[in-house]
Every structure is written in C-alpha cells, then in structure tokens.
Image: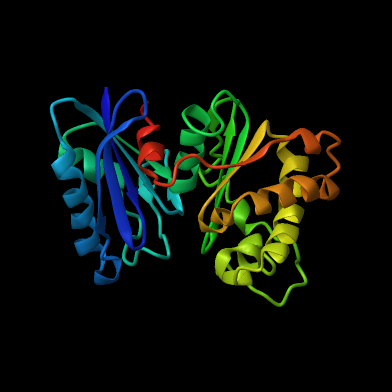
Length: 265
C-alpha cells in the first residue's frame, strides 16, 4: 500500500509518497503562499499532491494546523492560513484526486506517527508535543488519537501554568505554556525553558500517566541537555509517584509527511 502524506503549514507544504513500512519513497516541499489567500494556497495543495500520484497510491492523508474537525473533514479557521474558514478539505481533496482522504490536526498526526513507527513505537499511551514558535500536542491512548467530543482535544499548548501572568497567549488566555515556553517566548534561555516545561509536563503526567513523552520541534534541537533537565525536574511537579520512570525522549520524525500517511497505514 502506498499513501500520499501531505503536511500543510503556514509557510510550506511538504508532501511525500509513503509505503506500508512508513518509508518515504519520494517527497518534495513547496511554498504555501498563504498570504495570497485561500484560492492560491489550496491550489498549492493540489500542486504538492499531483507529482506523487502513481497507480500504487491508494489513499491520501492530510495534516493541517487547527482548529479543524477530523470527523467532518473541515478546517475551521487556522490563524496562519488566511481565508481557510470552514473549508471542507476532505471532500474537496476526494473530488480532486478521486481517492479516499483523511484529515487530522498536524500534532495529532505527528503523535500517531511516533507511536506507530517512531520514537514511541510499542507504547500504547503517548503524549507528544512539538515545541517551536508555538506549542502543539497530541494524545495517543490505546494506540489511537484521542479527539474528544468535538474533535478538538489535545491542545495542551494552551493550558495555563500561570493564570496571573501578564503575558497573554494568542488564544487570549493568560499564562499559556505556549506563551511562556515556546521558542519565541524565552529567546533560547534553556534553563527557563526547562523550568516552565517541567511544570507543564508534570501536570500532563498527573492527568494522563502516559507510557512515554515524546518532544519534537525547534526548541528540542538544543539537544540532550534539555531532555536531561526535564527528566530531573518533571517529578517535582506532579503527584504521580512513578513520574521518574516516564521516559522523555526526542521525536524521530521532523516532517509531518509520515504523520499524515499514518492516518491510513
């Protein structure tokens, strides 16, 4: 089985043809051209898919920034894709390519890829977060994405760790972890990143008691020093007595291509 995985971002679209073993057989990246509006950027999606279409391709997986509803296949209103409001992307893509299509939040898809094929392979309960200019996350329970009632679960980047903070997140909430610990929030101060992320992840451990925590994104490229500090500090911020045995490790995949493909594989 070959699947085309498409990762739609605010600045670029990465697409690839992936086989049943999650190996990327061919891939390319093109600009999203989001600032030119929906009409232009949706055509870029089709341009990304078309060169990868071969007779072996049986389905398309698409991941995109939220908010979106994977159950209905509708992209609701992502702030970094101007004009993408209530877009029935699954339907549009199926009509365009004539193949089955699934849509998922980008971090949910990335978490699924890590659980099935990547750093968390073999674990049933996985918490995944991408820490870059923002913080996105996905929750995998019993090997499946946890969507919640409305398909909007897993937005752990918008949990507050300081409701008294003067720093207001783009979502409007005071003291969100995204506002306090993303790459743009702390300007590379690794010690402060570790403290704030540890407080947040401690709460995650108290809530979910995951088998493993997988972290990706630009901030984690600082290397083992950050992970070592998190492993030491997270147990101080949770009631869970087993937190020290919860692995905290780097993500295996950098691109969302395999995550999108994993919706079918």
